[in-house]
Image 1 (cartoon, helix red, strand yellow):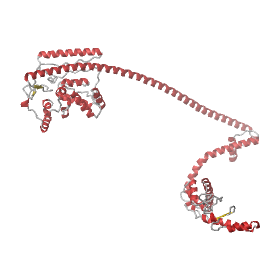
Image 2 (cartoon, helix red, strand yellow; image 1 turned 135 degrees about the horizontal axis):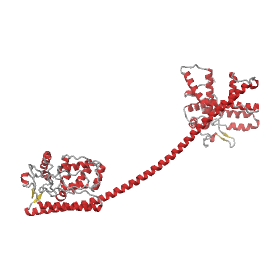
Image 3 (cartoon, helix red, strand yellow; image 1 turned 90 degrees about the horizontal axis):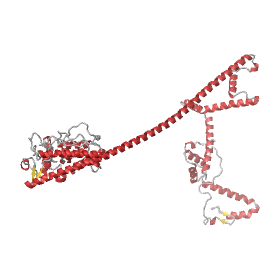
Image 4 (cartoon, helix red, strand yellow; image 1 turned 45 degrees about the horizontal axis):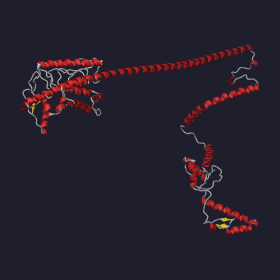
Length: 595
């Protein structure tokens, strides 16, 4: 024991006592010694002599059955019965361990599993242990070493250091918590056994575990009463017994009342939970019925709205057909007038488009020739009245009331042509009852600001009637005001489209049969171009809002917007385009004359 080293606890291990080659040499020497001892037997002298003669010290091999010696060992394969390591032999586990056990301790302390330890022992040429044997041997070694270490610590008891006292107290309190309940149960079981053993001794069960414990504690501290047989005051003992019985009964009554109260509370709580479940089921059923009624009502309202929309579509379709027929009639009338003018004068007449008549007449083109006599005005008023009658008949057929169109006041100075705007008067407008404004539509009318973008808007080539149809078709309110110019109407229509949300703008594009794919600015440009494509100026004359000759005749480029026209003229001159001057290209009537 004195030679024991504790190097295993910090990873070291002593060197092995011998190598495998030395052990094999010792084994061969022992076998040869046994053969020498057998020479004393007279019956086996010849055999031993023959064996000794055939013994090959170099190889140490001889087979007595066939007489094979070490000379033929080269032909025989050199195989071992145990592949790797040495055959396991029984070794006692002790604190004075050898190199194999030291290697096991070293590897296990490093955390290697049993299979790895067994494989390492075989690879190093040590004992060939199975993995299970390695585990069991490690457990036994650890117990032996722990016992040896405890003995050394007890023999060489060290002093307590700073901080260890507090640690000891805290750990003791933690352990007490673990064993408190166990100790109480053991104490209870102890007095139960005392009561049972006492009943066996007295041949009757008279005292409970509680009574035995209270009596024993009273005997220890001297508060226990003397036996009843030895007490001279029997009356006092009887009264004391009666008081004790009454107190026990009162205590039991209190306990029973508490138990009844607890049970009643449990029953009440159970009934309350049951009622809550019933109420929840009823509420859920009511909610289901309410949702079902709401779905039915929504379905009914949706079907009603769908019917209303269908009727409105039919009504608007019929009204659009009437307006379209009137527009075709007016266009055909204008075409015939232009052909008659060309046949008489031999020149093509291009009207000044969208130029309203102004009272001041200071600027060029402020006056226009009125081609329509008073009889023609009265005829157009009659046409308007006939138009309203047809609209009323269409509305009566669809069952939808329609507001009557506001008649345009026609005067001698008004221009009935689809290209000429009346003086300070607004076009008529159809508005169907029950329509509601769009979400982003302004509620208070304000004039739109005319900008470069609004002047270049494709809708500027549309006539007043065509703009009015756009207002009616898209249900835009308020209608055109009396003091609102054509350029301001186009700007307000552009602002109205810009106010719309992208989803609303896509709906408008679909209703106008325009592609609804793209960003908002693409949808706005596509919708404005669609309105311009369907205009008379585009279909008949191929006119665009960016044409320099149209820009020179458009009244929007006047006043503070004249600078935009000047910039456009300069850009046209730079492109090499020919610009007609006012003195050479305009007649006294304010109309452009082109060959």
